[in-house]
Image 1 (cartoon, each protein chain N blue to C red):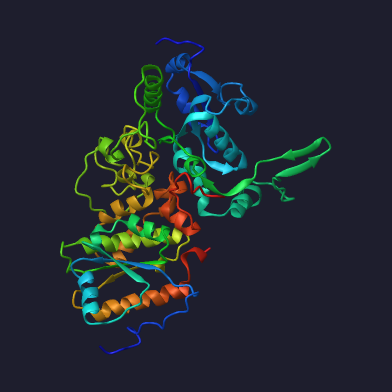
Image 2: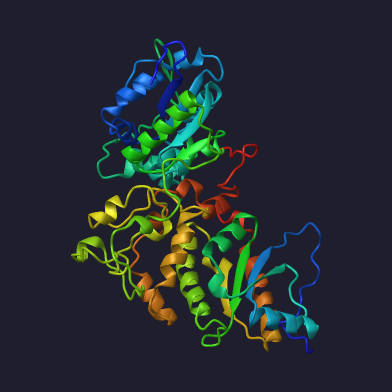
Length: 342
Length: 150
């Protein structure tokens, strides 16, 4: 590959409300990170390089070629950075489950802002806060006023706040998929390969996790659910056939069946499968179909084995859950001109 | 047609009063025909119930219910053939299991599970259909608008 410093495309990476796993995942491409450095001028990446927000603010609009944005939008700072990077980047990618569909941070959408703060600053067993000190958006100190970001009522996805060009699912996206995406970007920028259609899901398959699963599936009939610690699962049989709640049927392929290959049920981190807008209701459809009973009372008894339906079916996709949107009177699936206000 | 408490249509509400929107998914073979019979028999039912025909309640993806509620429905009825009578043998049992799980999920989302009702109405039960629609409309009126559930 020829690299010319003057024409090297500019790459930015940013994290909003996230755990940092997506950042580590980028480094999981190992020595290929050197190819990334050779192909791109990395202009902003808080976890790895020392450019500041003011450096991004000083750039011209559209000066960054590609921005990989991970993390959900939890507070006013996340939202500011989303808006800033949207303006400065030609291509904005929702990178990883948080930016794409809310992920773990968005599970707090099942409760309220007040309850979340009460738990974090007063009620959790590990909290020692006798004066009930709470974070303030503004604090006066002799040197002046200190500011903290405002904490929004709900967690939103990047696409619910700004216009997003592409999404890369996964918690985190798998290294081989990340490299695939970066390689595609290099081909586009250096060799004139065509851009994928706007809104495409990159770095993932177009089937379900089940299609990548090496286990043997039979005609499913579930007469009771068990939790993973209660049995030693057969290494070759479908986990769902064995009564272990596996999100495989309602999850997009792309990870290569990592969890299911080692006896752990799929948790659903690659989001809803293609042509499906809602992972949880998709899972309800798949799961309820295979319950082996026609008697309402027995059905309820079997369903009692699902300990936490909402947290299990929407562990990664609460930010885009249709019913959560219905509940709040907003659509989780917004177009550019109807963005949700917090 | 005898007017009873069950099939009496409520008095027209004043235009500014809140009216529910109820979406009813009826299977082609039993319930839709039952509702058709109610129509042919000139049995009236609550006008806030809007019918969508599906081939079988087994076709009812729970996503349809979620989407109806997202787009402004205050309640959803799913109506199919009586147990044992499904045109496709067991589609209605599939619907039964899905509705049981979906109602749990609605509750988790803070949505009253009464907003989703699964009923069995055969092709000969026009009166039963009108009764079901009216009961549901009454129930949703008493629950109020979906978005005031907070």
